[in-house]
Amino acid sequence: MYMSFKNIIAEQKKPLDYKIAAAVAAIREGFNVCQSRPALAFSGGKDSTVLWHLIRSHFPEEAARMAIIFGNTGVEYPESLKFARRLGKEWAGDNFIEARPDALKQDGLKYKAQCQVLEYLVESGELTKVLKPDGKLKTTGALEKACPPEMWERFEKEGLIWKAGTPKSYWWCVDQYGYPILGKAASKLKARRINIDCFLRFSETTSEKEELLEYYEVLRNAKISQACCDILKKEPSERVQAELKVDVIFKGLMTEESHNRKVNFSTRGYLFKSKRKYLTTPFYHCNPISIWTDNDIWEYINRFNVPYSPLYNVLYRNEKGEMCPMKRNGCYGCYTDYGRKNSHMYILRHTHPQLWKTVMEYGMAAEIQKLRSCGAGSLKISKADYSRLAIHQSISLLDGEDYEYALSGTIDRQPCAFD
Image 1: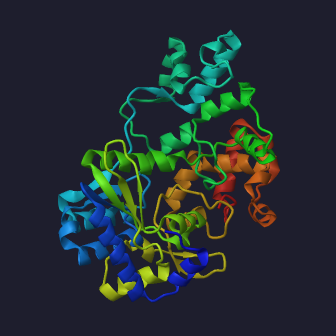
Image 2: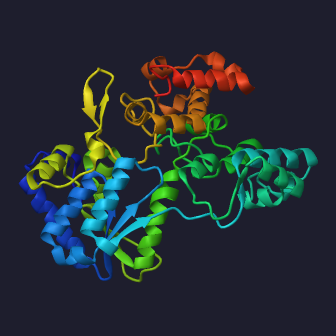
Image 3: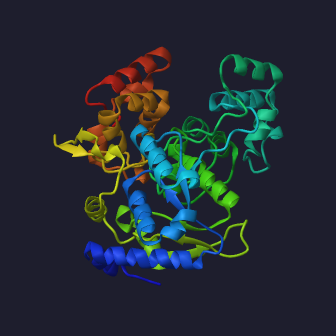
């Protein structure tokens, strides 16, 4: 199937009844190719809730055996987490499954400690123990194994150890990989921060692309990464899918939400197949509400009295001074819309100030400051964004307690420069 963007836009303009019929046809096709176990990717948000209601209404027998996989990242909005669990119990019972991030299998060093081990190896002339011939780090484990016992003991006293059994939480992700401050188009590498440090410092591998060189320069200063999305969402869900031998996954994705989703629907349609190691038959992705819009979702909710997360009733004051309801569910620690008006962090500070303060004080504010200070030409942040959001460059010249004091003062400033 191929559908042009023009045709997609035409489909999006059609009435809800047409879209319901198209969605039901897509769902039927998904169940028809299912040979093992169907599943719904449920976020607790309005879109996946509406899709679940559609499936329950039109395919009750199939819905009764469908697994409902809720990706609990650990940084869910409290309203959505409570709603997802309640609805899961009412509508799915034992078929409602929370997919949680894996736990660490062994003790590991926090990034600050990894940096200290790296400097120890440089000073002691033992760097070759952990580096490949091309200057890249062999593995993070190799670096941690090279840590002397006395240093490890000190790290334990200083709280710089991630203990075995600790879940790979958002906080672990941002420590080991970096913060989700920019979108996937801007954050290109999925590698631990210490690995990137070694690559930038010791590897002779280079690039002739100016955009990539600018990106490397940003990485020398700021910890940014999109790895948390894979680690907290994708990997746990796929682990559950493998355990249940799922071969069709239904998702409430809509093309109006991003250019990438529009491209995918244009080339793949409502149903497309891929592979999974645990299956000898194809694995299918089904996106029945691809041509729907936010207005369609709310029209459906109101027409059929569908329950939805109270998160969408939480109000905030936008930059024009208007009171607006929250539009998006998701991880509260995400800042992929950095630099845009009414961004995730701007809204979070107004709706959940304590969560916002926790994320900022834990380290996001410091990374945003570094990102701005280093200049990010390739990241396509407009001059208007810089002028509106800029922090005085003198903060970058401070260190120690002076820097922490200046940074905390900036966080507490109203309106806050970091959102």
